[in-house]
Amino acid sequence: MLAEALAISAVLFTIGVIGVLTRRNAIIVFMCVELMLNAVNLSFVAFSKLYGATGQVFVVFVMTVAAAEAAVGLAIIISIFRHQETVNLKDINLLRG
Amino acid sequence: MGNEFLPLLYSFHFYLFGLLAIAAALAFVTRKSPVAAAMWLITTMFALAALYVMMDAQFIGVMQVLVYAGAIMVVFVFVVMLLNLGHPSEISDIRGKWGRLIAGFLGIALLAEILALTRDPMDLRLVVPVIPATVNGTGGIIGGVAGPLFREYLLAFELTSILLLIAIAGAVVLGRKRSAADAR
Image (cartoon, rainbow over all chains, first blue to last red; front, side, top):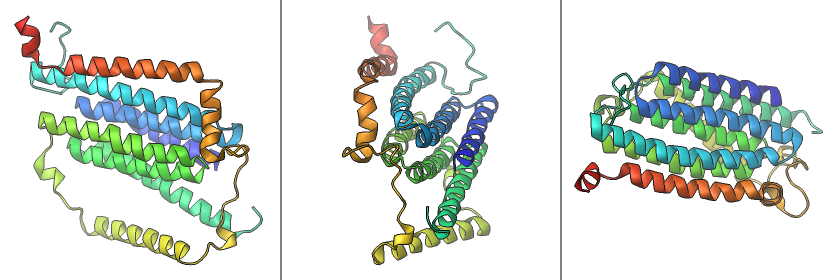
């Protein structure tokens, strides 16, 4: 099942990349990043079946980092929305607040 | 695996949940409404949780449902709601005849399978053999993950707590109302 799991992981990661590159909504881009993290987690779990439980430990770390990233990223999006009234990445082009 | 039936059943469900994950991910990137996209992403995460359980990572599967589908995605949906970004016309749509047919068939088939497997004592041919790579000694499934986590990776684990603390502080500071900063 390792080859199939890695193939599913690769397809999911590619879908996530396509979403990041094509979507304009900042929240959906964020969700695509989460999808890519999930795809990597699938690879970790698939390899942990071969090489022991260390891969699952890394999945726990990835989940923690994803939670932290989601909290901070969404707070930034809320902050930008308060300032500019949009979450469209095309309209967010100023570094100056 | 000493029989022919188990690998077939296993492969069937592996491909089923794999295809479900990929199909839901494709639906996710093509939705216009953020709320509909979030629901499809949650479907992907549930399918991935099923794959984790099938690959002897039961603890990770539970964490996937609790943390990813249960906590992170709720934050996403909450922010979409807070910013009022959902398109009402797309959220309330019900799929066409084929969508309903596939969803109903899949749901009823999986439910019937659960009922059939839990009603009788488990057929010995269906009991998945335990892989010793992830279950070492008496620790069980969680012990296999907790051992390396609290021995080799203890420093990383402690650093993670600092990361979470920083994330909480950052989220509070960034999410604060602008007027509080202006008043200073």
